[in-house]
Each structure stands twice: as C-alpha cells, then as structure tokens.
Amino acid sequence: MLTPHQNQVLNLLWLSQARSWIRHQVPMLGSIIAGKPELQEGRMDGCIDIDPTTLRLPKNARTFALKVRGDSMRNAAILEGDIVIMEFREAKHGDIVAALIDGETTLKRFVVQNGVPYLRASNPKYPDLIPARELVIQGVLIALLRLSAR
Image (cartoon, rainbow, N blue to C red):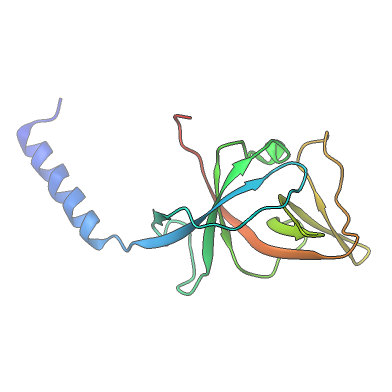
C-alpha cells in the first residue's frame, strides 16, 4: 500500500511525464492479410498515439498502422489482431513488409535471392510469393503492438 506522500510523488511524476511526452499520431489504414494476398481498399480508421522516442523514429518518419489478419507471420511472432507500425522506406533483404504483389496486398518477409525479390511467409503452410508482374513495397515494419485483451 502506498503512503499518501508516495501517492503524491507518483502523481507529480506522472503529470510531469505527461507534459513532456511528445505525441505522434500514426494513421490507422485498415487491416492487412498475413495469409494469401487479397485485393484491399485503403481506408483511414483514425489514428494511434505513440511515443516516437520509444520506437526510435526519425523526426520526419512517414508511418502508418495496420491491423493484422491471418497467421502467415506467426513464426515471426506476428499474430492475428496485432497492430503493425510501418514506415514508408526502402526495404532490405529480411525486412517484414506490407507489399502489393501483382495488385494484391499482404504482410510478408522481403527476400532477395540471386537478384530476384520475392515474399516469404513465416509459417511453413504458406508458399513463397514470386511476383508475375510487380512487387511494390508499401512499408517496412518498425514496431508491433499487441493488446492483451482480444
């Protein structure tokens, strides 16, 4: 049990932290399938407030959030219902990305082998996805949010 003095000190600390916290709003752009790619309309579902210093975001980071649907990334600890924070930037081999592959969107690992880029799931029941026409990286994973009550 906290003493009244400890309670007062904690309240002052929380107030000072709340004032110094720099708010960064990340737009929530719907959901993304972690499974077989699918056509998807982009939509804005509000914003998520985050602390950019906790995520080590550069000042001008262009970020967005998506709610995960499916289980193709479960071995990368990305589960159905998680929220992924993505950054618009160039992907490197091994990055987890939101990608548009032949007109359909999915969340997968970006792989480049012998100069050929493709997408790989983190669940063995899903095949590698090799683009027939195009592969456009829409964002690179920089953070994962998991709410305890689902």
